[in-house]
Length: 370
Ligand code: FES
Ligand SMILES: [Fe+2]
Image (cartoon, rainbow, N blue to C red; front, side, top):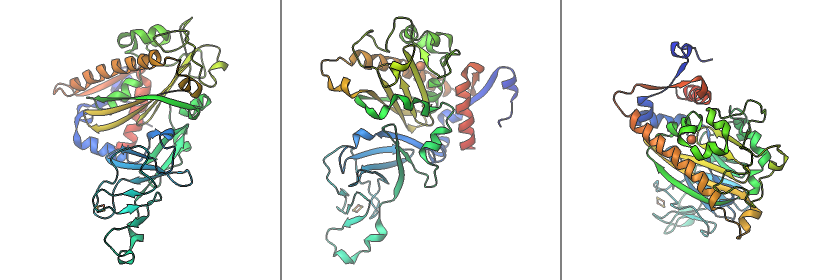
């Protein structure tokens, strides 16, 4: 249990310090102790459809190579050649075939990570067995790939069950049945924790997101959940049917949306690097990739039912651009915060009781980083 501080008694609890938002040393520690131990969202299963398809992602301070093997299973390795350490693959994509060939001396590995070719050397002149790629834990949930650099990590579902945001309650929306209609990439001048705190509260919503709160009136009150609903859903305003610039579109609803009494939105922060935002017609998945204490890359995927993506007569732009508009509004305030927390006058941030999910973030962070 966290001890109650004086500031909590007076309605405030302590958030991160200036150093925690800016220090390279603390950032390095986070990459080891948080990104190096938790399961991290790494991408979509649909991007690895065929044997040999590759996903190259940064997890913490490591480059990781994720593949689909000959049995259709996911495999993940440190993206490091065992000869003299060159990074193996630069790009994600298809069409590379079933061998991983190092661009330095052309040594090749199988999709299982075994060293299978060493040009200019007799086959038996090298003990290839000892030079297997170093593997990494990989699993999938709801069509999403997760990687853990901790070989002793707990199973993914058990780990998901420990999140205060209850991401597994979103399984009813069957995200693995959805298809990605596009990905946006934002380079953001803010610490990943500034972004995570911002996502975890809605005190800013009425000020920063006027279009969003028109569609989701509860957000005007600063609350992220609706007191009279037990399913953690939040109802759209009367007559509103989606989070989109255009209402009453002919887009199919996500699975299970029909079963709800009202058009609704749901969300979960899957600590440390994933946001899941479900609304009537689209599931938006966000992935943070921390680059430095003051820089984070944000990847955002927009998932719709397959029938919607396949129907080229449907216009998804009003839905995607609405979500992107909200994202850009958040990015602007987070960059503003990052500039402020770099000031020598700034000591630490605080949370009020209405920012209770931010406080949950702090508790988890402190349990892992100290
Ligand atoms: S470093 Fe990869 S083949 Fe030499
Ligand atoms: Fe926001």
